[in-house]
Amino acid sequence: MTSWIPLGEMQLLPLSGGRLRIDGGNMFGVVPRMLWQRVAVPDEEHRIQVETNCLVVRTPTSLGLIDTGYGSKAPEKIRRRYAMQPGAPLVRNLRDHDIVPEDIDWVILTHLHFDHAGGCTYRDKNHRLRPTFSRARHYVQRVEWDDGVGDVPELEGSYFKDDFLPLAETGLLQWVNCQSEAEPGVTVSLTGGHTRGHQMVKLKSQGETAIYAADLCPTVAHLQTFWTLAYDQFPLIVRRLKPSLVRDIVEHRRLMLFSHDPDVAAARLVMDESGELRVDPIMRLPH
Image (cartoon, rainbow, N blue to C red):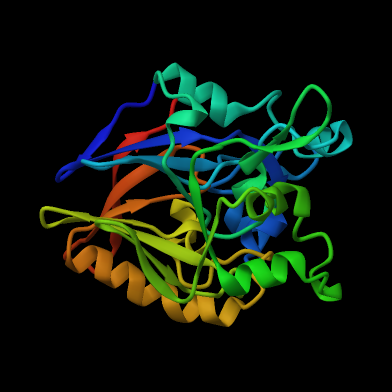
């Protein structure tokens, strides 16, 4: 079982929103297979193991959540394709830590792809869509919402409205424009890159800072500038932003949180004397 990470007066708890397998070429874009297979061994269907590392954030005044995994709604065909876990993995893992969905005060969605926003909703016994976190304000960048609901032809298959439309219909949606402090010490910032409305989260308390960069840098392997996702809508933005983000994390000794790494949920980044980047895990994930 994973344990809480102290951050000043906050506590952080990385939890799985469900493991899955994704085509290695999609996870590493233009990187040749002969390189990426050294760090991510593919199965017979060329898929690699990927985690959906959600983050529970306990502040002095609230309990929040960053991203929600893929949830329980996907049809069986899709579940087989991605080797998704049964049921609602995030809800199950929350309960292992004595947290129920009704305890959550706020949710930040870094973007609206199914593996980050799918767990926002579920179907009840009458097959009706319901918000999973029925008390929580859900923070989404306005441009991300516009793309998610906009039926843009070139984004077909990127967004599934059942994942997030009920948030607006039930009054739980909180739009963000560029940057906002969602809670004291919890700031969201528009980055773009992976999607037009992708946002990252900065957590700060008593001089300590953690960065949840989401799909700007989903795994340890993606710390390299040119290792980007085939799913990135604007890869040049990712390549531009990521080096400066990594430098900032190294220079200021910030905690780095990885959205999809199957082994390392949180780490410190250190530049050694030879200029090589070293990853010092703070939390390794159980298998």
